[in-house]
Length: 103
Image (cartoon, rainbow, N blue to C red; front, side, top):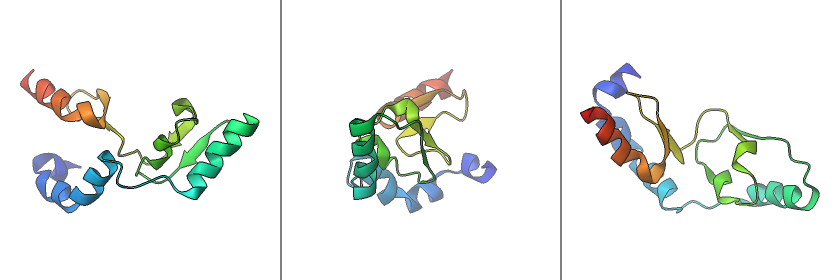
């Protein structure tokens, strides 16, 4: 984490395709994601959806309530500022970080 905070560019450059693909919805929810969504829609019995993936694809399944999704290792569809801890979605992240650093 310390190395990333000193110079995030190498890591971000390495992950550029993945990060932008996630933001632009290049990657699509899989049949497994849609199956869980359908089960929830038909039965209403989903209590939690645990995922170890950081791609955020389960967020494309709009019928699964956000509060039921537990992203064990975090998710690329949300970000948090390392300076203040404020959480935001991907589109607002850059604007929020710039404002926080100026403060």
